[in-house]
Length: 174
Image (cartoon, rainbow, N blue to C red; front, side, top):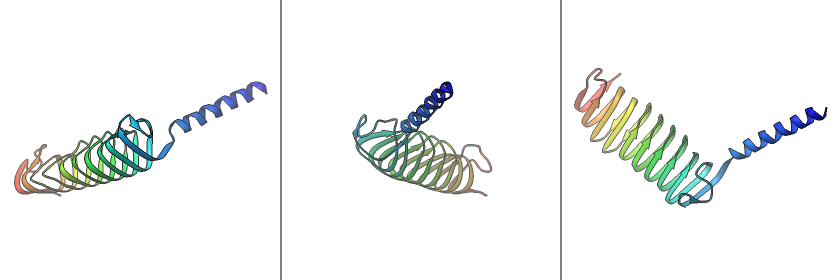
C-alpha cells in the first residue's frame, strides 16, 4: 500500500511538473531576446509585443513585433518587419520579410514571402515562394514547387515544370 501511494505521488508530481513546464503564458513583452517577460522556450496564447526582437516556442493570438521568431507553430495575426516561423502558420502574416518553414494556411502579405512547405491561401508580395502551392499568388516574381491555383506576376515559375514551368503575366494549373 505504501509503495502504491509513493508511486502515485511520484507520477502525479511528474505530470504536474510537465504540465507547468509547458503552460502557455497570456502575454509576452520583449525588448531583445532573452530580455523578455518569458523565456524563449515558453509558448504564448494571447498577445506578443517585441520592441526589437522576441522569440518564443509557439504563439496563438496577436503578434506585433519588429523582428519575431517562433520556433514552433503559430496561429493568429502577425504584424511587423521580419517574421521567422520554424513550424506551421495559420492566419494573417504581414511583414517586409515573412518566412515559414512548415505549412501555411491563410494570407501572407509583404515584400518577400517564403513558405517552405505546403501553402493554402493567398500570397502577395514583390517576391513569393512556396512549396506545394494551393491558391493565388500575386507579385512581381512568383515561384512554387507545384501549383494548384493561379499565379499573377511578371515572372511565374513552377519548379516541377508541370504543366508549364514558366509563363509571364499569368500561370495556372487546376
